[in-house]
Image 1 (cartoon, one colour):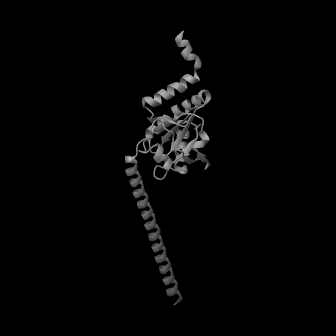
Image 2 (tube, rainbow, N blue to C red):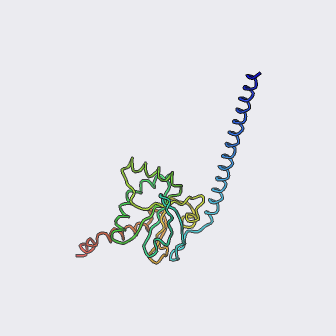
Image 3 (cartoon, rainbow, N blue to C red):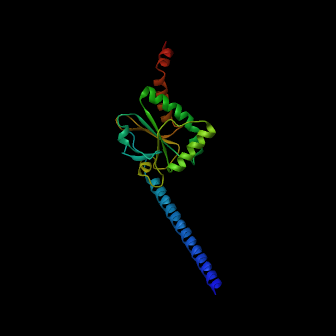
Length: 209
C-alpha cells in the first residue's frame, strides 16, 4: 500500500515538473516572439527616419557604459566628439578597432577630441566581444564604450536610425552635427586627416619649405 502511494507521488511530481518546464519554455518562446516583433517594428520605423541633419544641434542622449555608469551628452559638452557605432555581429567593426584606437589617442592628445564606441548590444555580449579582441588580436581598449541596444535605445534610433555598423556621427564643440556616415566615407577620412595633422604640427610646415 505504501509503495503504491509513493509511486503515485513520484508520478505526480514528475508530471508537475514536466508541466512547469513546458510553461517556462512557452513563456520563453512568447518573450522571444515579442522581442522579434518589436525589433521588426523598430526596423520598419527606422527605414522611415532620416539621418541627423548636418549643422543642427545633436540630440541629447543618455546611456550606460560597461561599468554601469550613466553617461549623458552633457558630459562631453564643449568637446569635439565622434560617436562610432559598432556591433559584435559586424566583422568589419573588429577590423576597424586598432586604427580607431590609434586615431583616438592622437585626437585626444592634440585636438582635445574624443572618440566613443557605441555597442548595439548589452554589457555581457559587448564585454565578451572585447575580451576576444584583446586575447586574439592583442588589442586593449583605450576609449569609452557606451551601450545602446539597437532594439530598444532611443539614443541608437536617433543617431543611427538605420542601424548601420560601423557608422559615425561627429559633433563639434558647439554641439552641432558636422558629419556622419561610414568609416570609409570621405567625411570620416577628412576628420582623421585633420586629427592626424594636429598631432604632427611640424609636418605641414616642413612640406611648405
